[in-house]
Image (tube, rainbow, N blue to C red):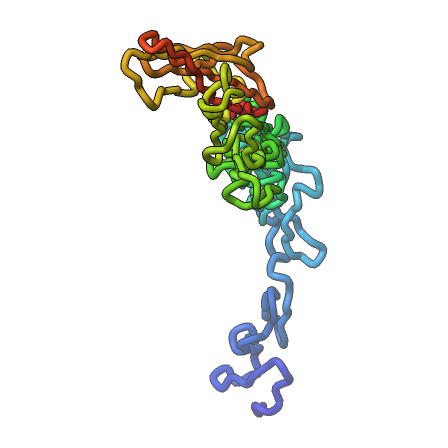
Length: 391
Ligand SMILES: [Ca+2]
Ligand SMILES: [Ca+2]
Ligand SMILES: [Ca+2]
Ligand SMILES: [Ca+2]
């Protein structure tokens, strides 16, 4: 028997001098593929599933028709022992019971985690089964992390009518000077400064949005302090209607044009403000020797008593004495004369006088000289312009 004569699956054995079976499972490197197991046969071999030869699969696996062991999905087949609060998770060869997110296992039961107790939220927290939700106090918004809170910059919406200041959790409004914050905390309302005090302005206060101003009556201007009234001196400013022949006389709140002096006969003019009646003239007997014209101004409502004018004898005769008196113009008894020395007297305002008014007083100085049996008088015709206002 030659070696060539052996059929496939056999090889000639010289020693035994016969064809004997080849063990392909040993000689062929990949006799069977995959999980197949190689079983040598006389004249060939078999590839059979590996488990085919095992009697059973291990726990958790089941034998498939192809002879392999497949994992049992206990969760799918409901053969698990998880309790109803738990979820079943299949594993290779087994399964586990677990709690879903937001629950934890206590005493074999899945119980909700109270995240609020553990400070999950920065501000407000609401626990719900399996979860929680954070929220923020007014003035804050929830950050994208859903846990922390961010201050709202309310000023971006311009809620204040004037100025806005953002604060942590809120905001504040401020008003410009001259305004105050209204009860709503956002709008600004004008302060009525005029209602604060009646002494804010000397004359009259005019309220304006955010401010106030003082106004003065005609004939006055508002002083640099913005509050008091100063007389306009129309005679100085030239803003008057006096002719060149007249003399401008300024007083508080107004002015007047004084006509040139006219002395009526038998008086003759001796200066621009004085008329004289000559002693030699018989017509001058029993008349005042001189009439001196003087002008002054007086504020309305001036406090009393007040010294307002001085009279003094200019010539002194030996043995003479002087009597000072108000000869006319004092019908309202607002004035009286007080002798201050042998040769002088003061005109005193005794009662408050209210303007506008023009008072003409004849102040008489009587000279008495008993030595030469002389009695004569001279007059000061005093015109007092009483202003309308007490300033
Ligand atoms: Ca929860
Ligand atoms: Ca804020
Ligand atoms: Ca105001
Ligand atoms: Ca004036």
